[in-house]
Image (cartoon, rainbow over all chains, first blue to last red; front, side, top):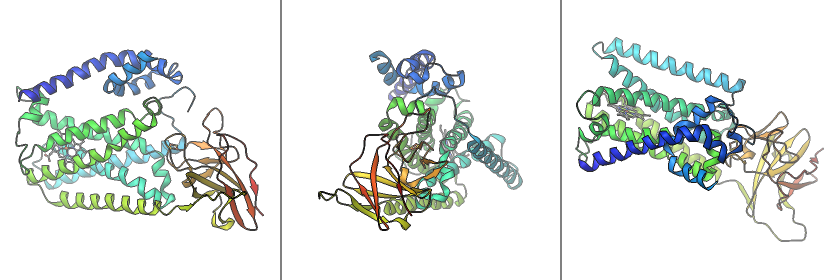
Amino acid sequence: MDIVNNLISFFLLYFAIGFLFALYFAFKGAGKIDEGAKEVTLTFRLLIFPASIALWPFLLKKVMTK
Amino acid sequence: MAVNYSAVLWNRQKKIYDRIMLGLIGLYLVLFILLNVLFFPEITAETLIIRATGSCAIIMLHIILLIGPICRLNSKYLPILYNRRHLGVTMFIIALIHGLFSMIQFHALGDMNPLSSLFLSNTHYGSLVNFPFQTLGFFALLILFLMAATSHDFWLNNLSPKIWKSLHMLVYVAYALLIMHVVLGVIQLEKSSVYIVLLGIGLFCVIGLHLVAAFKEKRVEFRPQKDSADDFVEVCDVNEIDENRAKVILVGDENIAIFKYEGKLSAVHNVCKHQNGPLGEGKIVDGCITCPWHGYQYLPENGQSPPPFKEKVCTYDLKVVGSKVFVNPKPHAEGTAVEPVKIT
Ligand code: HEM
Ligand code: FES
């Protein structure tokens, strides 16, 4: 029981951090790692938003090393 | 492709595709709901939505999984493959509605948080008949989410094609989870066995067609490269290649597509720069080799994508002696112009 609840808390925390990161990444960070994503529409930014939440540790590493 | 990203690259063909897709989905949902209301008047609206969207999503998943092998067996169906991405994202959205309504209906009304309730309200994890089948749906939905969310080319480029491809291969894991989700769910809710029979047919088609297509792919011709002074290797008779189509040949490690168009022959590397699609299974459209998977284009005479795009593939030297086609398997640098060989 506790294990399951802890895992769920972890899952929610992961997505909460991801959400904050995605705010940064979709509007700024993406342009840093990819020239083609510098001047793009709002729709494009919203389109990459969900995956920015889900993949935040990977993307954070990419932005940091750029 | 190396220009600024846009949200969706829509063209006329894709718009027609999307309209047909949405029309058919609408038709299915309306028919499903009407028939159910007619035959089971006591059914609640929530249950109806859950069942209509769940069944619609699983049908779409079957279509998505079947398109690949069907197109490899018969290139006539390539237009369906061309926009499979929109089909996938739409399927996810419909599955999401099913999942959300199920969560609300079964897990949001108690005092537990919905996710805890999903995993803990039924704990017969050791039982087959009473297994908490909804958790399987949850994990499948998570995979479908990852795939839909990363379907834009931005992710393909920035996650690297290799990671992206592995991520999207997870669709088979999701499929397996969903088969269990439906089978165990139906057993538990003692619903009609029609579901199981239909699912069995679907599973049979998916496995069968994948095997047949894999078997057919193995039969690409293979010529070991001999190291004589003349490096050209005989391929086939000119007449064996159809107009605007290609003959694919493996020479040593080189995977080569030889295209015939407007009385000429040109050879390029058979691997698309986008996602390693098989260029040789595509057609020449508007003078360009068009990848069968997502439509990237290359000029046959130099392997370059027409501007403003910047993709390039290797080219090869060809010659024709009598009616026999020969290719030199030593590749030129990507994008090197090679004079097409005239055929008479
Ligand atoms: C959080 C994720 C999910 C939950 C909580 C969930 C829950 C349920 C429930 C409660 C049922 C039984 C409904 C009934 O007949 O009364 C069901 C059935 C079904 N589910 Fe899911 N599901 C999830 C994800 C999915 C996904 C991703 C798919 C397919 C893409 C799917 C496809 C189906 C199908 C085909 C059925 C059987 C037909 C039907 O009764 O609707 N489910 N699911
Ligand atoms: S693999 Fe996507 S267009 Fe060729």
